[in-house]
Amino acid sequence: MNLPNKITMIRIFLVPIFIIVVLLPFDWASIVGLIIFLIASITDSLDGHIARSRNMVTNFGKFLDPLADKLLVSAALIALVGMDKIPSWFATIVIAREFMVTGIRLLAASEGRVIAASIWGKIKTITQIIAISLLLIDFTPRLAAYDADVFMINKLKYLFSTFLEAPVANTIGILATFMIIVAIIMTIFSGVDYLVKNKDVLKLEEC
Image (cartoon, rainbow, N blue to C red):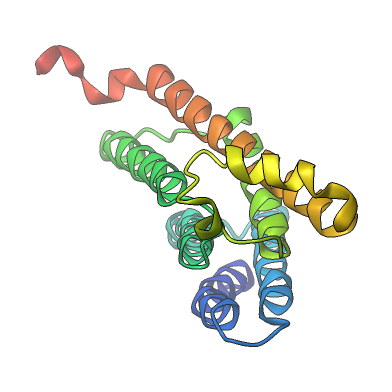
């Protein structure tokens, strides 16, 4: 196994560690989880750069790298749902989009086609990483306190109305809420863009 693939394997290994850490009942769990999440996210660019610059690109790496990305983001979102920091439908949309994209890529690969990642997909990933990072250090009251506030409207109202009581914490909470909304919008938009651009792979005329 070459170096880039080893780094990718380490990233996959960090996923269960991240889940265990963020769900542990101690004060700094989310901070430690954030550090693990950021390390895993940063290594995503590192393994790809090494593979391309040293001509170490392999089929195994092409399979493993996107899998590691999807596992990390999906695990983080599921953990945040369990921590009552985001509504479950947010995570469902993100995971459903990844299933769709993976399915289309598999169909394309079966025909010898390689679908490159679009700029919108990259922006989507960046917004997701920022949103998850902010949510991990968002220590404002949990969603459960707002009667299942699925659109986070009541949470934003609460954060703005109590802003002066805890300006730093509420600023992080507002930014985290804003970024998860942006991430969801980008997830939907990039998914639709991906589907439209590659609809020929589905061969809808044969349905």
